[in-house]
Image 1 (tube, rainbow over the protein chains, first blue to last red):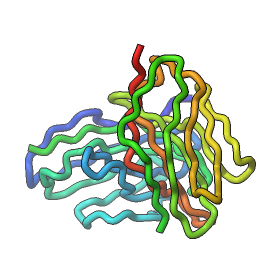
Image 2: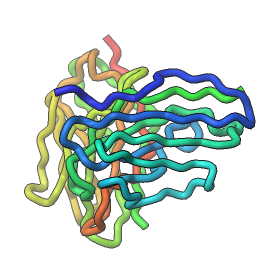
Image 3: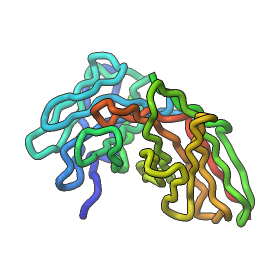
Image 4: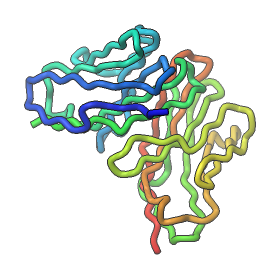
Length: 114
Length: 115
């Protein structure tokens, strides 16, 4: 069974631009979560989607948004990029949106904002 | 709100020595606890998880962790370190019975294994 895939793997943008990252969960998984990883802040939860609905949202500004499609694939969008948005963005999928579920992580998208 | 503290951002051991990575949690309700490992340029891989079935949890690659409620701890151990264990390790907590898969991670511990 294929794992979680994220595209693109690397991305370079400039301040003020917007970016869209994509995540394809493991087949059959309906929950997708997004995390931001930076050296200073560590791993921080962005949001979670289940059955095309946002179930949880972390403490990030409205510039960060996401959505989930009927096939469970998810995208996250960051508008008006800032230098501090440079990070590794990790997507994780699980069967259902429950706290005991194991989450399977993708390799991440490395975003660099210049 | 739940939180996780990992004591020691860097741990160095010799190959064949005991690995002990410390994790303490804070949660208002009995939590679910997880240990993940991250190798360079990769995502996170689950090592083991505690969901109250047993306090001593065995995971992959010879790792295990013991849930101690009285100490609010969930330390990760491995009897004998291997060079391939060098990576960053994250402890995470998920509140229950909250719906959703949201994880709160510790700061991470970088494990170095010396030959």
